[in-house]
Length: 330
Ligand code: MEV
Image (tube, rainbow, N blue to C red):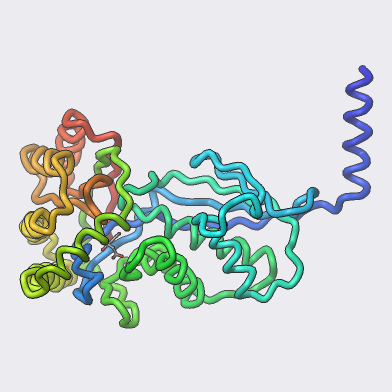
């Protein structure tokens, strides 16, 4: 009884003296790369689309306790900002945001981050956290930011954590549109002449993009002309794929996916688990399949239609896929 009375008393005091907090929410989708990963880091075109079935949500509200309190249960993070190393991926977004927005007095905030995007799986979880967190902070602190500003900021954050990113992940996640991307050039949203279906299957193996991108860079430094030729071939595949998508002929994408996967194997970024899933999808009737994203783990994508979607999904699960997602590109 005494405890109840104390609890009520504290609750009433809190209501009287602490102003009700306004909560600001922002979210960002995942993404998949259809064609052109790795080569895109070297200036070749790549195609990527948002995946709205998975997303990051960020809620920001005023905190009753001093400090900036971060709660990201999916990665088991419950901490005050200043107890985190400044290069922590979430802390660095907040520090850089406050610095660039010239916030002189640190606000007291509660930041809750939830995500359905698996980490280090090629689905753009890092970029999605950055974009959603930036938008939620901007909105809560009354700073207006255009998409271009959010994208430029997210690219700077990607550079801090991923070495030499092309910028494709932050771009697709920020604009949430199908993008034909060439590093350093204005974004081009591509037209889809006829919708098509992609099945995404997760190896369940976390593989940081930074590592595969770093390994490819080492290979490239050792023999630039060999790897530039591979990048050229991948770039041509992306270019051809865009034309097929635009012309409403997605059936051509299957063969292009298979060719792109073979080139990614040559680049050493596939893995036995990815290859097994790719083979399994093709064997079950997919028109084509390839790894998607940085590789070594993470996801594969397969081109399916209304008849093959179910058997391909089943075959992928039987081959060990942790999860499958079906997404329509339209
Ligand atoms: C990662 O989603 C795509 C890569 O091409 C890296 C990049 O473009 O920054 C592997």
